[in-house]
Length: 468
Ligand code: SAH
Ligand code: SF4
Ligand code: F3S
Image (tube, protein in one colour):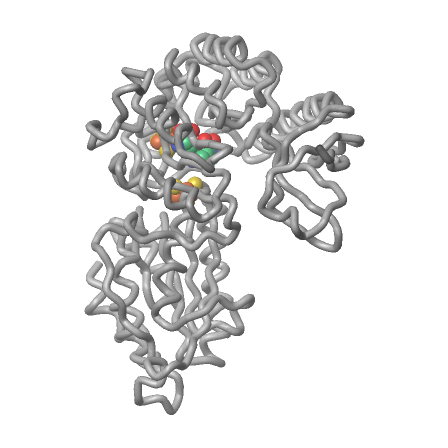
């Protein structure tokens, strides 16, 4: 899409009433409001957008009503995710009537996958509709729409924009964009393009800089994060003990950076969980947690999904992980009701769930996405009711096992990075990614503390801080 041509056509009255001069350039500030859907990668991209908008003379506002620019960072993973964006932009139209200079922008995976312009033609009341990588054009486009906004110069690569981190102690670090895997159900390769790996040097520079600024925990992001291939291998240290798996090598390098105490990553793919990768889970900075999506417990379904591994291979990987790191918490992703999934095949997923004794599952009902291989090759023939039934069944199994597993924490000490403080109560995640709550002061915010667990509820462990 040629945005330059369409911009002012779509929003002819985009200047605040009565402003013809560059008042913003003289110090006026404008409000932006960002709504982020989807995964952590989108959250990290929204942090980059903020880093672009602030030097343009904008500041974050709490509500869309207060905003001069609303930016929706969209997700396309399921139809429901896109429907929410359609609904939201419809609602913002009323706001635009009251405030004609309001700019509404949509970025993320919807524009990313919209190669034929169908989504853009359907969505209403939107001034800018652009894929994530084009966020570097925002200064130009926004200052064309509102000359009061200060244009700034940016590098062409959006990953070179340093994200704004809201909690100093925690940061996302995107190490890879796109995906080459083409799981048949998945829209991501279409929305985000083919896999691209960030340079090792820029990743390590970013992590060092974060550590220098007080960051304790980083989450490395990539669609198949453990398939990371460094474009600049010369930056690996000669003493790095790993040789084959470059993601394991990266984890080792990050483990050496002083100040970084906790390292987490998402999402790894089971087929790249080789021995080096599993060994790297024992590095001292690694969280006692891994999220390893399985999608289905039936080998025929896995093949149809193009996951490139069998049920048995996945089970073997889990066994190896537990042998190397006993006590590790394991999360997964599951899709129920994929094309042609029979009751028996679904029960293979149930039995795999029980066998792996997962700590948590993010279970989704299959949603057909236009353009994907599954939409072209298979029939979405499991009824909505049946998908719901399978979803609830797995959800109940998960809740029962979560309750049981949480009970085991009672009387134990866990280390918690405090990310929330309110009215004398602190909250944060343990190394097992369990949510923990305890009484504590504001000075604990952004620190890692030990908490002895007294009570276990479904989604939260409650305890008392242990003073050394
Ligand atoms: N790259 C990650 C997953 C990214 S998408 C991986 O390979 O595991 C996040 C999750 O969304 C997937 O793990 C899958 O469970 C779910 N998902 C993806 N496409 C879907 C679809 N069409 N319908 C329902 N769930 C889907
Ligand atoms: Fe989608 Fe599969 Fe790539 Fe994950 S690995 S992003 S599920 S295509
Ligand atoms: Fe959604 Fe795009 Fe992430 S489709 S899950 S926001 S990569």
